[in-house]
Image (cartoon, rainbow, N blue to C red; front, side, top):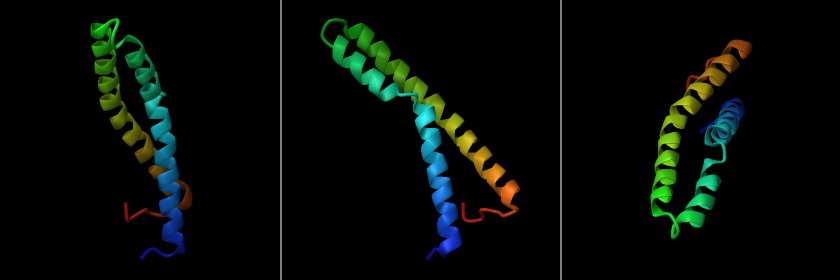
Length: 87
């Protein structure tokens, strides 16, 4: 069971991860949904390219988000002189 301090650390990390997920996504899901719905009948080849590009972007965006979270945790640890040992 987490104490008050550990629970607070968990909240900081979760909110940081959420923030980077927003930046890593860049609204790509909504944009892809719009264009897939628009072109699915009129231009299936374009729809396939949109889906492929979205999947490719999502797969390359995840490692970037992980690196950003890692940097944020490192910054937090240096500023507070505390180690987030449970991560």
